[in-house]
Length: 195
Image (cartoon, rainbow, N blue to C red; front, side, top):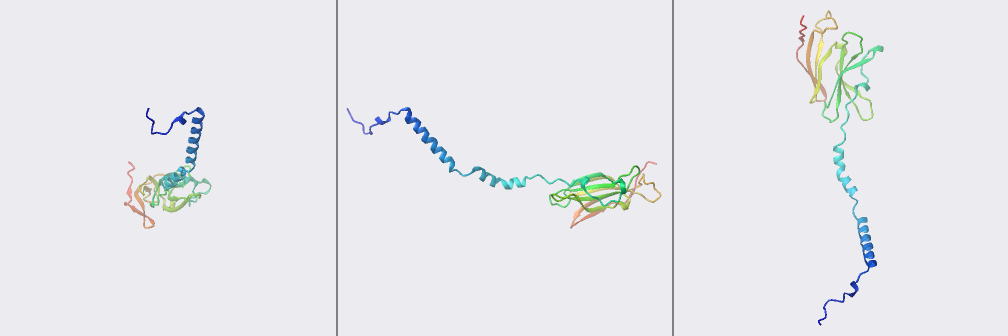
């Protein structure tokens, strides 16, 4: 008989207690390895913070219902007739353009056109008056698109024209340029009333 060059393997006769001790030792090694791993949530959050900041909720446009307009309406108050939000000055924060007139039971009260802005935690405020109510215009078509405000101003050719029925119209636009709203307009045109 030839003897083996390998060591005696008689000690490999394992018992259940041996397997239990081996399993416990392996579990301890795995648990310790987990304690010494880098904090995955810290590395993930530090990498994703700039992305989260870029994906922050966009600022809400100012609400004209919360603004104080420079109108003298006495006890009747004012009415916001039209409003449109838009980033007018390119700062990635929307402004609101509001068409406002005194609340009247009848007739066509003159309107003012106002630009509102709002800082976080404060009330909306008027930063520009595009049309004064004293100019005696009402506003027809009205929109804000791509930083341009457009409106059709309705007015009167003379003081003898009834206030209910404007007989002139002027198409105007305003755009923010060099720190101010620049107005462009077509000449006033008569309104075809069909009479």
